[in-house]
Image (cartoon, rainbow, N blue to C red; front, side, top):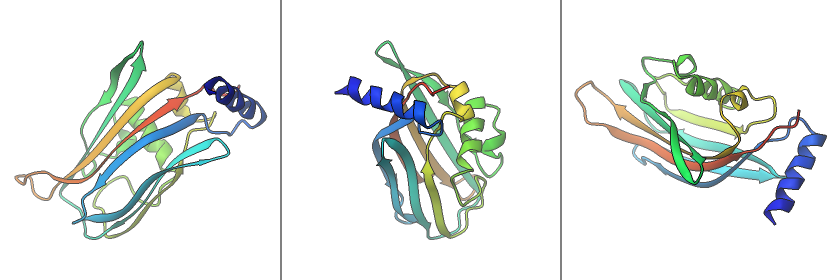
Length: 181
């Protein structure tokens, strides 16, 4: 069954260069109900997978917001960490990160979002519309084909001395496939 599915993906890629070359699965998430409500989800349509979110932020978030992406790649049966850093989005724009993977993901994501990656985050509706990777994505030049685990958490520090308040966290598995040339 998997070989048939992989062959179908390859055939679709040969026909349409903009087809997604990523498959998302196993999404788990938690939102801090004191700050936000909504959904984070995976969509699959005609073998094109996308990742999205529709979240309503109830109150202003400022001070420090530390985003911690943790990306792991499966190599020979073991997951190896590629990225595990803390980014204060109130001090540094993630699209200007020193880490090339974080910087590229941030730049790519701006095509799919209706909000700034930097704080403050004002009350309102925050959308991530159908994030996917196609054969033209610059991210595919930085990370090889294979299976991955991504875990991302966001903690809010209203003041420098305050304890962290978890805003949200999610984990998702994904697989990258060779893009049609």
